[in-house]
Length: 423
Image (cartoon, rainbow, N blue to C red; front, side, top):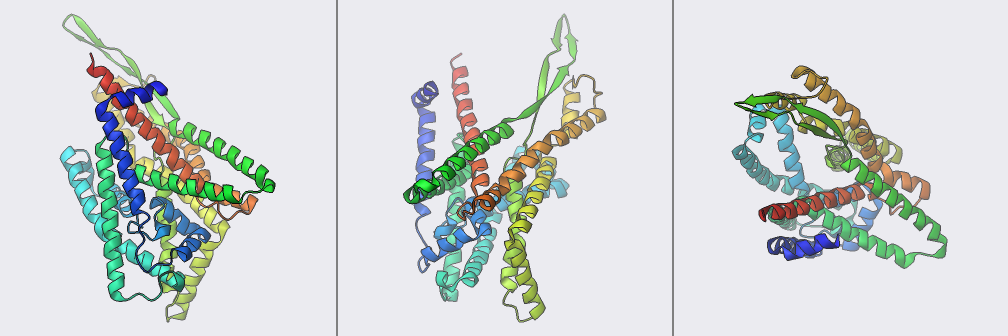
């Protein structure tokens, strides 16, 4: 590890790229502590600490929502926009064709950025309305001018973070959006650890040791599932050209246990938040049955058992769904056949496609099960310990480990490229 760090420091452009990324993350954290005027930050933090759903929103905003800062929506609108266009690729054939070409991908990326603006404004309006109705102590009575000013400021903050994220991505040392979320989680974790250590007593010693052991075991499990893959053997046919023989190599096709990463959790959170947020707008409706339905909906999602079961099932289902979006066995089988490759014992074409699909569904089961357990881990811990501060540990840990692995691989690939440049 020390040798790798020395190599990174000696490579001037790589060193400058990493320092640039660190500066951008510092700017992000500084912006996260600039609150919008007229907000009772203490009351806002109390609300986020007591609400599981708002706690999840705070994670995917990069930990900036609970400060009601100028970048309070974080990169969540950009993530939502990206997911929308990915799903459109499944529904609309034209989008699917565009995703296969470089020019088409650039155009979709541009549309994704444009769509982020109205989504950020809409989510900002929804969050302000939600906070205003949740507690008058947070925002008080705001005028129409104040509301518009807040929405414009928050939307500009989201676009600013999106720009920073893309600048980081251009340095090829990791995904910028993921690193912003990572930085927010780490900052929140350090603050939580500091507060815990400040109030710890000798009676809590065994409980803290238990948490540390569970965290280490969970981290090991996340690494195993994230890196776990099944290697499908692939044999390439021999070809004779003139007096020479080509091909005949044996390689493998890696199928990951968790192809979808953390996206199923993001999907599940988006779905599980939607009914509660919509119900907040109708809880004060003049029509009695509508107000009662909204109150029942909010109460149902506040029930930890219903919330946990629904959250687990959504994560499990979306793991399979998103894998179907990003992995196409038919295309893989066609590409293998065009390149003269085949899986030993499996006929090329349709049979290869069916074999890959069946194998993928089998190895996805432990990955989907693990993701679901990780998602509801805080609820399980809270049930057995009774500590209310455990809100998003499992999801946060999954994101942190995945981002660290992705960034380390990106840096190692940069070092490998420099080793080849010497030949």
